[in-house]
Image (cartoon, rainbow, N blue to C red; front, side):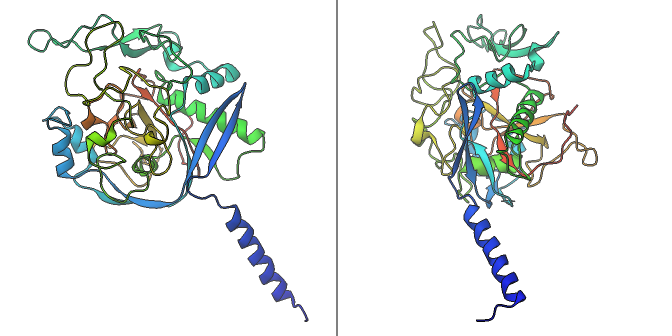
Length: 365
């Protein structure tokens, strides 16, 4: 048989397509990144897809009702948008199986010499006030959190040792982006980073798509709408005593003990705590930051900036609730705006994403 140039070209093209297709990761594929010093970080592949962003009026009503426990009459639920809307994630991406841990962040700080915003001269962070003994709602209202100097991710003012397996907290938006840049540079120098990809914070659409675990329905939590089915799946305000005390968090709480009045170790709930994409701790745990600037009208399919031309972010978005939150504040659709890019809190953390670059300045102000 005589082989023509055209035939060879066609066969070559088909070979390239076949090889490319074979190399394409599939849903649930994982990578374990070597951070050095015996520390690793696992990411999970999430294919392109679509989901319903936001929440229904019924969901908002539940969130502020007797079971959800969120404070009624505030604007918080309006941040989720007027109604769910179809949102597309056009590119596949990899996402951290868990929130970045204390041990993983420690490895970054040791190798890079990085100093977080809270650790800089004059820096401070929001932490639990150990002298707090209740809200005293009928007299002088006091809150359990206060801003303190001398505290940071190394010492978030727990009443117990900060363990490497806990999610890192008391880190700012700027600190999180620095971690992602370090990881990108490290993997690129080692020849392990695919061309055209970078480590970064997820976009708001990627985060909510990842949180919902592949469901196209507008559900309260990644497992469904039933709170009771969340037992053994998430770290949230529950029936647990505060360290060294005989009382737990007041206000509405989940009607079970999750074993942790504050943070739980990442992926503590194992397979039961992982959603349809294999991601752990997507509801509760600690608030997770995304790239986007906060739009009080709702999240966006593409990255949202304070100034589209300059692509600036001054008020980042956090998602998913935290260990202190009531069930109504730890749903897939919940979103809040953070004070600024240097603010940090012992209820806030992050998880990384490996995906196509998002245009943003190295340092947002």
